[in-house]
Image (cartoon, rainbow, N blue to C red; front, side):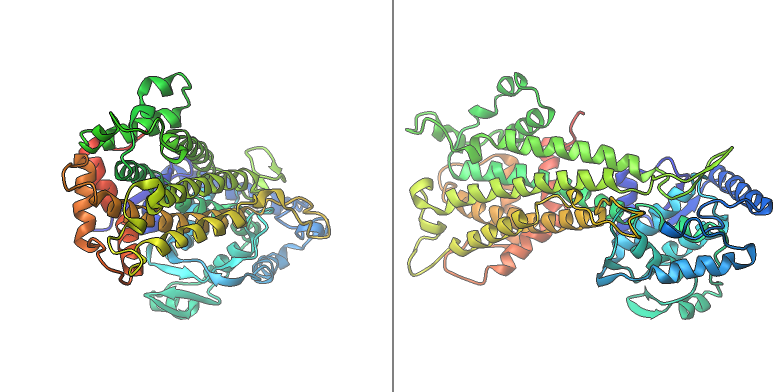
Length: 513
C-alpha cells in the first residue's frame, strides 16, 4: 500500500517534503478544505474575466508588456505562448528527487487558494508526481526574481502534453506517456500559466535537499571530530558543559554535548592526564565553537525554508476582495539563507581538513608518517588528505554568495533578482563535496585510532562505528586503491548507517531549540 500525504498549503515541513522527494511517500492528495479554497479563488478570477476589467496576469501581457490588454478569446493562446516561450533552460537536468520536490511544492502553494488556478491543474501536477512522470527540467535558466520561470516552464509544458519526461527510467514523449494512462493533457486557462511558473519551488526543493544532507553532515562531523580527537590522544576538557554555558550559543552547547556523549567511556582519553601537551590545536579544541556555529546556521536556514514551503509565491495574488500584483515570487529569503548555509558547510569541511592534516603529519600526531607502518615504500593516506584539500579549495571558490549578484532583465522591469537557484545549487555542490571530506576524515582517523587500540579501547559508540566500517574498509597495511574505501564510507554516511549506530548508543541527535 502506498504511503500517503495530504497537502493543504499550510502543513508541509522539511521531513515530509524530503520523504516525498526520496520516494518514501509515494502518493500526495489534496485536503477537502484546500479544494474548497482553490475553487473559491478560481471563481474570483472568473468574475474578473466576466467584468472585462484589465488585471495583470489574468488578461494582460507579462513583464514589461503588462499594459497590453488581451482579449478573452485569446487567453488560452496567451497561456500556452507564455509557457513555451519560457522553456529556455540549458545544461544538465535536475535529478528525479528534485523534480518530485518541485511538483510537490508547486501543488502545495497553489492549494492555499490565493492563485486563481483551477483544481484540475493541481490534480494534473499531482498525477505526474504520483505516477512518477518526471518532466525534464534543465538546471540553468532561473534568476530567482519572477520566481523560477524557466525551470517551471519546463515543468508546465509537460502538463500541457508537450516535450519529454522521464518515465520508468526512460526519456519518452509526454503525450505518449499520458496516452498510456488515458490521461488528457491540460489546456491552460486565464491566469494559470503565470500561476504555474511564478514562484520559488525550484530553489526551495533544492534547499530542502541541502538541509537534509546538511543535517547528516553535521552529525557525521561530530563523529569524525571525536574519532580524530581519540586518534590524536586529545582531551575532552575543552568540551566541559560549564565552559560552553557561559557563552551560551545554542549550537555550541549542543556540539560540545554531542562530542562528550560520543567519547564517553573512552580509555584513550586517560592518556591526556599526564601528557606533556598543554593544549590541543584549534581544530580539536574549538570543534564545538565551529561546529556549533554551523548548527546555529542550520537552525536559522531550516526556519526560513519551512516558512517558504507553505507560502504563496506566485503573482498576482487573488485575495478575497482584490487581486493584487506584488513581489512574493522574489527568491531573496531563500537565496540569502542558502548562501549562509553554504558558508557554514564550507567551514565544516575546512576544519575537518585541518584535523586530517594533523593525523597524517607524524610531527604533530606521534603516529607513523601518513598512518602506515612502512612509509616511504608506502604513501599511506598522504594523497587521501590531498583530495580533502582539493574539495575544501573547490568549496571556497564558490563560497561567494550568489544573492549579492543581480542582472536586470525584462527591459529593466525586473531590475533586481535573487539568483536563488544558483545559490541553492552551489550549496548542494558544497555539501556533496563535504560528504567526501568527512568520509576521508573517517578513513584517516579510524586508521590512526587503530594504532591506539592495542592497549586501550575507545568509547562504545566509536568502537561500534569502527567495527562497522572495518567490514567494508580493512586496515591499510600497504598501499592499495583507496577510492573504493572512500566511496564505501561515503555510502555509510548517505544511508545514515553510521549515524544510526551512534544514535543507538547516545540517543537521537536532536537539538533543543
